[in-house]
Length: 210
Image (tube, rainbow, N blue to C red; front, top):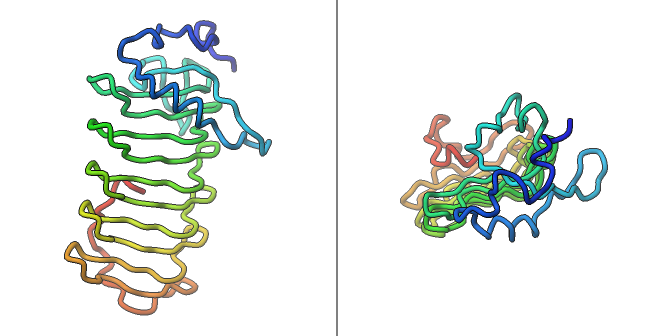
C-alpha cells in the first residue's frame, strides 16, 4: 500500500524538518546508513526521506510491523529528548526495521547500534554504558547468535565471553563475577558442557541487551 498523500514528499510531513527540536544529526545519520539489503533482491534498499516521531499517533505496531495509518511504514522513526537531542533513530522498509538503528543516552553518549534485515537481527550489534565503557558486542545471522557474544560491566571488566553457532552455544564459554573471578569456564560441544558451568540460574545483568 502507498503512504498517505501528505507523507509522500520527504520534506512535507508535520513540518518536522522545520521544528527547532529536529536534531540535524538525524539527517547526517540518514545519509550514511540506509538499509543494506532489500528483501529478496540482494541490493541496496533506499529508505525514503520521511521522518516521524515515535510518539506520533499515526504510527502503530502490529505483528512486528510498523504501520503509518493502514500502510506498512517506509522511512525513519525517531525520538528526541526534551533538550532536542536525538534519543532514537531507526529505519524501516515495508514496516520492518531495515539497516542500522541507534540509541543515545541523554548525555549524548551513543548507547547502541543494531542492524536489521527485513526485521531480523543481522551482523554486529554494539552497546555502551553511559560512561562510555563498552557494554556488549553481539554477532547475529538471521536473527540468531552467530559467532562471539561479549559483555562487560560498567567499570570495563568482562562479564561474558561466549561463542555461538546457529543460535546455540558452541565452543569456549566464560563468565566472570563483578570482582573479576571466574564464575563459569566451560566448553560447549554438541549440546553438552564440559568444565566449570557455574549455577544455571545466575542473574542476567544485561536484560535489555539481548
